[in-house]
Length: 460
Image 1 (tube, rainbow, N blue to C red):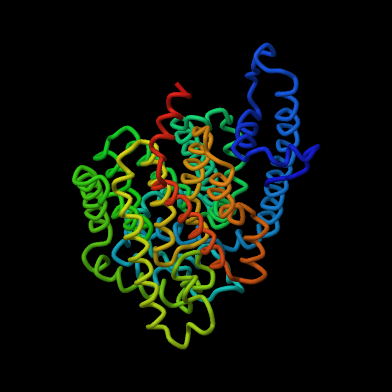
Image 2 (image 1 turned 90 degrees about the horizontal axis):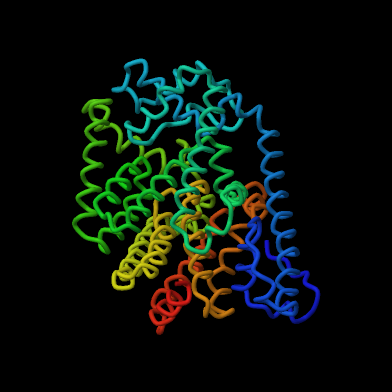
């Protein structure tokens, strides 16, 4: 995404922050008065603007074309019911038929899937629905359509939710507002986890929207409302609970009360949908599925998390208890390290970087994190980029530290290679850990507060 084809050696030494500022002007019509700038001052940025603009959009268009080609090539599998959307459609049909008490019965799920999905050559038995019952209500209206139509409609809704999430996020960004919304949208579609969400018909974009709404409430100081929004995300509790824990340590009782209130409401709704028998069957059913690949769980080598990094190798199978103990210990340590950012989180710009750390940490420590779950990273990417653009005195080295670990995560062809060729998406985890480390260091580095105050004065 970063080209180096500039006209002379001096341009190679321009700070990355300046490059970001130039890219921020892409697509905008505001032009500074020639009386303010000399031709010598404007020639290099203008050249950079066009060269990096061309390279950036060449990368984006190439990635989008790759994604579109792949989706077109697997359209037959989609029609057969292979995507994960099958589980949501199945759960919606079960509720619509009034069989909520059997929502977590494998035989019931398989019988329903036989009505719309043909036999697949990549799985045996039904794709299991393991999310809480209340989420199935979202998909119940789609069951009035055929499976193919419902899949298309759900992805159209995903496009709308992605646009709303990006629009809300853009409105609270300072420097990144110079990027038009359509550029945000195109860049997000080129992010592999977002593509994986559309490929599978998953609900990760819905979770992204909920987390963005919670962030905006946090940004306004509405702690109770932020807890309420985040509570609606417990349909992916393996991601939301670690995130809520860190935020509860930082923001205290108001956030906790909002979160608990909504969780209690959706838990009551779920109990009403499936009854006590379905509710008691759910924990053991979900655990068996996610912990055993033979029942539909994802192999550890395909998990971009601490679990995948430590247990996704052949040698780990010889000592499973030891490796799971190491995963638990590493997750607790990582949660503790990020939770200790309570003091830096008291400031506005410090808090935004702390939020970025928390959102990155949640999928790292979560059990059974999938690639599409990393769609949440759109939020920390925006927060870090906006912070770099708002702080004029950030050095080239500091900016490089903040973005270089992220570059492999943004390169979609590398994801395709790790997914389809090598089957080791867990190799993305070290880059995420490195990125988390440098962001955390940025929040606690000496003199950051003075730099932020100076930046605010210049912006004002």
